[in-house]
Amino acid sequence: MVIAFLLFTNLNHKFVINLALVCGLIAVAGALVALYKERWLGPFAFGLLNLLLVALNNFVYHTDGFIIYLAVVQKITFVSFLLWPGVST
Image 1 (tube, helix red, strand yellow):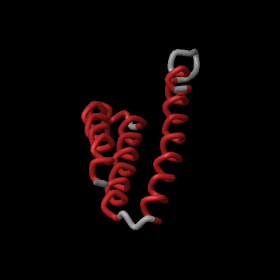
Image 2: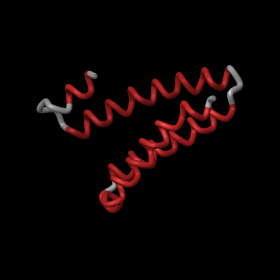
Image 3: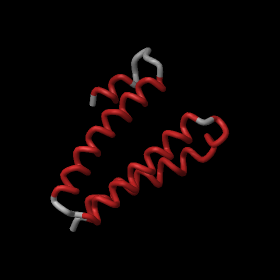
Image 4: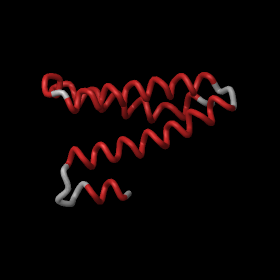
């Protein structure tokens, strides 16, 4: 919620995006640790796929040459994160 508020301030947009990325990675890392400890390997592997998609998303965002693909990568990443809880059932 704080990250959404910061998007409408005078702060640099890339700074806010990177701050959101770090906060999200902390949350996902915690979820992955819990999944691994419980030996839920399917959701754990899908979570790793999500992390790879986030890394690709971040790479495309910060690389000028691939910026035209950003919208597609963001949509794929978003759908992947929405499907992640369904993998655990």
